[in-house]
Length: 597
Image 1 (cartoon, one colour):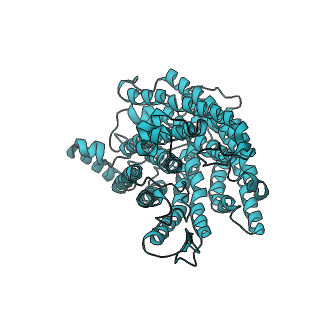
Image 2 (cartoon, helix red, strand yellow):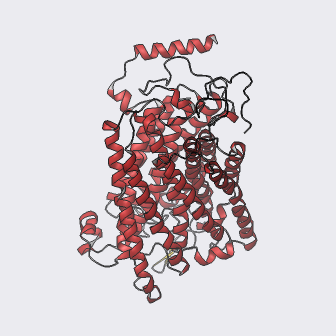
Image 3 (tube, rainbow, N blue to C red):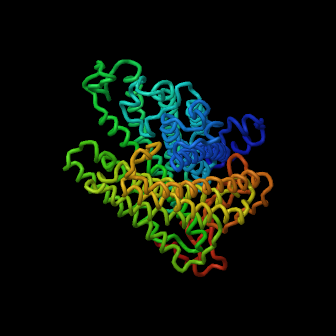
């Protein structure tokens, strides 16, 4: 107890005697709340770039070979007379995928919400290491700058797809984007991985060591469980991609042949031998599939928290939810081969990966059923955060069902390189994760900025986004089953696909409307930071510890002693209480039992 008092005295002393300058408060901050905001704003800017790219290549697919003033203005030499060059189309697809998967969804969810919520919800003053936390963000920022700068190299950015398979990525002479653009891609990703590892180690240590008195693991909110397990997956799988990137750099620059063998260019035999591009696929997807869950698990945690709070009832099946998070984490590391069914894999091995892939549907279904049961007969508060959470469940189920088809090797081979795959992973990972991120932003914006977002603009943002998301990705399943290949900048040379051209136009119109409506969100976000209605301390009447901190941010989170925890995180509508929520720091009444969860 005296050690705790000493720490508290030190905190007070630190607050009184070390006045923060603008630079130490807003730029090189070590306060987890400020670093969360830095991640969010940086991720938002990267998201705008990624969405603009997707709108550009959707315009190209809908109206191929037609001059476009926008292309001429934005792409310059890559769009002579306003007609998009085939190479830049591949580059846009590559950088769009990279930005959205790594820089928006990974950083926007883990970087923002792990930083914001882990110390606040477990009752800690800050992260285990504020300095490492700051370094983690700035490595991420440098990584973003390098990735964006690759768009401006003379020969063009990386154009080997976001999966950067050799030999396109391994031979600098393969195409324009295989030169300096590819090198910058690899350097950017190496720095990004270093950032992610530092962040993940910090999150794990903080959750294990810095929980307040009474905060046992079974009293943690599901958000913290999700962030904790996500960080562990990142620590296990990200180094594998780093090794793949380093070996690829050696193949490109130092004459090795880890991923190259029997290469011919214009009849000339290159000296590479003994390597295998399939080895790169194994290394990439050993990260690539857990990456899907690194993106989606934090969104699942946020949605669980928001649904319980806005249903005014306890989350259904708390322990089953934790078990399913752990099961998903384990299974995610043994399913990577389903991305490689068309690589010439041994059929028996394919059947093993089919089995493990279909197995992961079980914990995913547990979560989906528990969310639906949490909503059942709840006193639902339909604010924008709740709508995006329900939207998340909808797209997660819709996209997950098509995963059963792609997880079966015999079925996957028929649709592997078609728009069916694009539809599946955008719904189950892209749109679902974005919905989780938007839900989290609408719910925790008052905690971040001390102000409220405009609810009516939030409704407009949700409904138009929801309609457009299905308008874009639902029809893609059908053009995929019809055989339309992905990553082709035009299909006009194939009479077989002429009948699908009108579908692509419809998809593009939905994509453009869905992209433009994000301006409503951006306006709401940036204007509300300065002019939004001032937030009360606990605007959603939630039970978790972050809502016990004052609205005005202070370094150290609580002005006095850190609150102790006496109950689990979901005491909503509990019999025997006058109000329909009981915060975790309220002691149990005499004779009151803690809920069995």
